Image 1 (cartoon, rainbow, N blue to C red):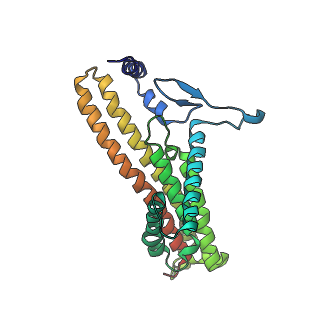
Image 2 (cartoon, rainbow, N blue to C red):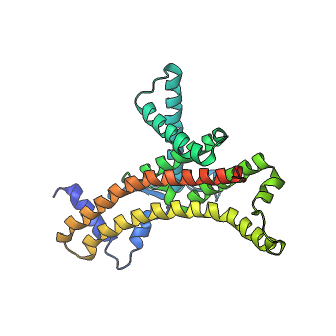
Image 3 (spheres, rainbow, N blue to C red):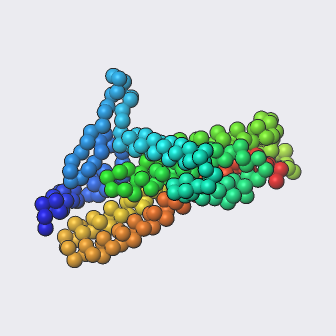
Length: 278
């Protein structure tokens, strides 16, 4: 075994030598540094410009990285269309996703007027997709496993949903449309409270669903790897690593699936708000 491999094993043994599972959360949660184990840690700037609240954490760093990559690729793709209407390379891949979101998500769920909401749906889809896939690369972080990130995405969806409903039906007409026709007057206060709460449970479900699914997969992979050190046996390594690789393959599918689900549900809620009479 060469020196690099030995260093990796020694580092893992030290990290997993404790009796608790805090090391798993260490890899899942946010931090003030980038962890390039076993090469070391790179600490990120804190208190920028003398402001205590302006810190660059691990998830913030990758948030900027995802935003930068997304902007770079989409501007590059748009530039290629100015030269030729026939997409090539990465432009062809991006076009497949754009057509998919338009024809398989926005049109069926929103219907007439879906073009107004397509820019937001595409932005949410590609942001989540890039974030999920970047998080599968070693020594990176999955920012969609941070509840503040998924909650922010859900809040944006909430405002788009409410804004779309009010623009189409008017403020009064939109809230009036939340109450089903034919409800007895006695039940109106109860139904009104239930419907108002329903407006907030939708973005809550969006945030928690994305956060939970992206976090769970990583925890399972780390837990499977930890079996090697818990069992104190190299014999279990083949089974443990094999199962971890299988879950990793599933995570690739989940990364794409969760981007689709978040976008589809957001589009569905927009359609329900816009076309209340349907």
